[in-house]
Image (cartoon, rainbow, N blue to C red; front, side, top):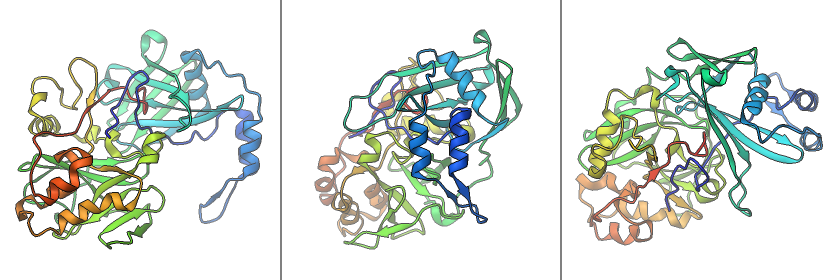
Length: 383
């Protein structure tokens, strides 16, 4: 099942990174209870967690501007924004309740002096989705957003200024072995899982793929599936990859469903598109080729013109067990699959996930894609 991005409370996957210091008192406790080894490894103790939860903080949760002042004021003077949709994630505890949120410098409107801010109670599978606080702040709210360089912005509010360094992947390109003759490179992705991808579009089959970027040091270890060594599953992320038979690359085929359900950093790269590196209308053209009904309805980032959402690119499956990944292998090794259609085996956009195995065994294309719109300001940022 596809999970669309949502602005105001609909189900959306959401990864987060941890705020280094929630409030001064908590930061002191955490720093005192943690130790960094000479090799850079950090030890965090259960004691630090318990003492943080036990703090009586009384933050003004109901006032987004006060909370923005708290978050910005808790940051150092310069931070690095790694995810490619430009979210700076944070977490904090308030009177025993865990919260997550983000500050986002959206490529669409940051140069107009706007910053997006959201926070909400942590997701859990056993409870209903919590309410969310979301605002767009600009000079009218007393918040200044200044562009210092292409990938460097300064946000100022109530006497505190923080420089946000965006992730410069402008020179990242796939090796020849990772891209096929019918494929177009859309751009590089740095996911909140700290895993990098290449976003590709097959111009003949009209489908997308997320291919693992192996030009950098691996940030993931892998387990081999029991049924075939072609399927690799990340020990940390749960991301499932298929080792292509025809090219030297690993294609993302699965995201663990439990991670998507709680909106954590491993819910898939659908919400970290290469916004800073999209050349012209290369993405919107690909989206319209993929789904012609989008013609005249989206901007170059894939945002719907009516403001209701952003198209979700999610060709991978949501799985609970290794067995649910085996149809990808059955398809890739099926002699009835035409060679020209081989890469279609790695896209769920060819049919209902419940029918995908039968469809691929029959080598028959379904009539329509299962991709759905995702709301623009999703839980990641305000979705």
